[in-house]
Image (cartoon, rainbow, N blue to C red; front, side, top):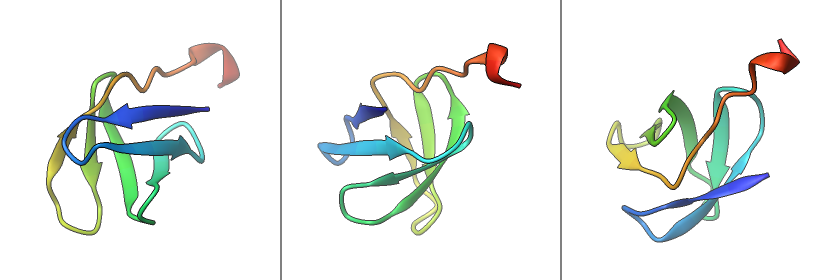
Amino acid sequence: MMFFDYEDGDFIHILSDSIAMDSDGHMMTRMGDSMALDMDSGELHIVSGWLYDEDNN
């Protein structure tokens, strides 16, 4: 599954419930349904939707 990063124009591939990687190889952590933190730069990014599936817990 993947979603879109409006800040960079990259697609982000979900690796787990809270970790993902963008097409440039930057690791991202989920901050909310529409927000992610770039773990390399520390910048917040607006994303198309990183929904958390509570049924998988």
